[in-house]
Amino acid sequence: MKGYLVLSTGDIFEGEWFGSAEDCTGEVVFNTGMTGYQEVLSDPSYAGQMITFTYPLIGNYGINERDFESIKPACKALLVGDLCHQPSHYEAGYTLAEIAEQYGISVLSGIDTRAITHIVRTHGEVYGLLTTDKEKLAFFTPQPIKDVVPGVSVRQMQEYGEEADGPHIVLIDFGYKKSILHHLLDGGCRVTVVPYNVTYHQVVSIDPDGVFLSNGPGDPKDLMPQLSELKRIVESYPTMGICMGHQLISLMFGCDTERLPYGHRGSNHPVKDLRTGKVYVTSQNHGYVVKKDSLANTSLELTFINVNDKSVEGVRHKELPVFSVQFHPEAHAGPHDTGYLFNEFIQQCQVTGEKSYA
Image (cartoon, rainbow, N blue to C red; front, side, top):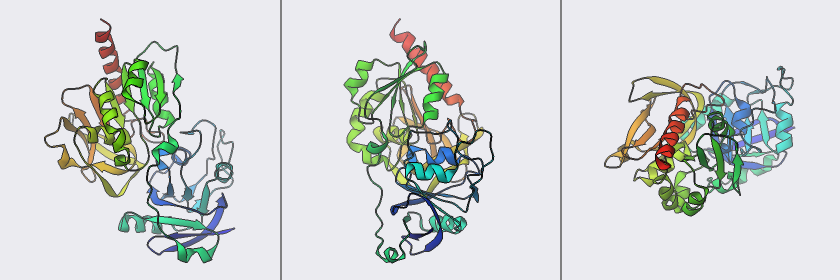
């Protein structure tokens, strides 16, 4: 059936609707990856957003059982140029349209995604309404996304790798990707996943060797009420943060964050390691960034920068065993150039654990 996308800029697109037939609204963002649509649609960091794929053909290798990043997709809609209904891959079990219907995600295809991307790049913060009723197009009121982390975080603690003989890691879940968990488990870690609002005393009772702050959706400043408790935790254990976790670590040590004009989303973003001078291609998905000038006179130092726009891509504490990166070293989908950062974190936890129990 026909569907309509109206943007907060006043632009209207008509296409073919698949999946959920219910109206939906959300922030319109674009992803530049040529592959990885299954990982993207299941990434909790896209909660409340309509994802525009700049690559024209989506769904051509289907959906499998293995590459989901969460139990249930959190995005609002997918906007694609050409939706493939006959995928070709030996692991494909479903089409993208079938998965969209199963999980209640709206898909609008046959639209000019390059035009939508140009609008977002020009205007920055853009919201959309997806509907089958043209009469509703004149009554769209944009609703900014707020406080979405509670909807994607676990409700109770979850244990993984109980038999592992490596460090015990507490993974604080702001909307974590399963690939992060898998990297820690592959590194021999025992992992306890805890809710975003975990307390310092709860973490102490778990007695971990290290703490990991995950990625997640929305504005990091929505979690300011939790910041003091998180800082007590981070100051007590070796810590690594990714994306949202990176922004929260920066905020708790006195830095500031701001919204990017149109975000970084895709698997081809170059970053430079300031310690070695090497450039890595990374996977990214974020709309906010740490303000570079706010690092001055804090206990954090800059470790990575974005080659394209010189934005902050990583920080490290000058005294504590704490570091974080804005990009995704687990990179699923995407290049695994920076996967070594997980090894650095695990080694730090092992060293600290040995000192603690000596």
